[in-house]
Image 1 (cartoon, rainbow, N blue to C red):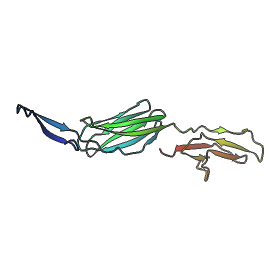
Image 2: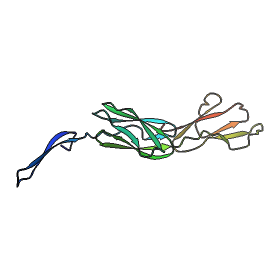
Image 3: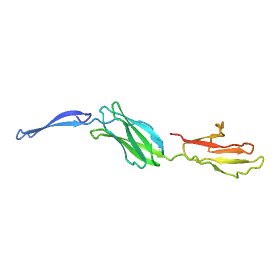
Image 4: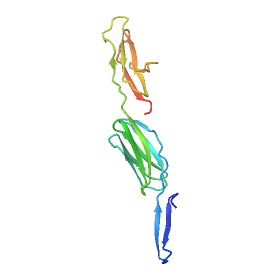
Length: 178
């Protein structure tokens, strides 16, 4: 007993008198390792899983101002929690069994990628000129520029628009992890 979950009878006997006390002791089963993505963007969600053998338990977030977690399923064989990013930072997500045994998983909440387009040069063009447009930059971001459909090869944070190209330009910025 003590290495795995279960119930056992423990008896303590005082040898000098022969008196004894018997107690039934229940040891909870440890949850398995939590699995799932360890990064999420603000306003996005990820799903975490933990193998369980007994129904019940609860998902919690160490810092709900950074990420919240909702119990999605607490039935064997897997407890599922949905984590939603609230603000950039790091928090521990914990799955606790009904016996108080815990598994802890660290989640990093990334800021929303900036999709703001900023011209890097004058927007009044002369023939043969260009305007450089840039979207917010950051680590693990990818880009796709549109006018109005996807522009082949336009996948960097900056796109050069020649004076001969007219139209409305937009960009989709995504995080490499979510």
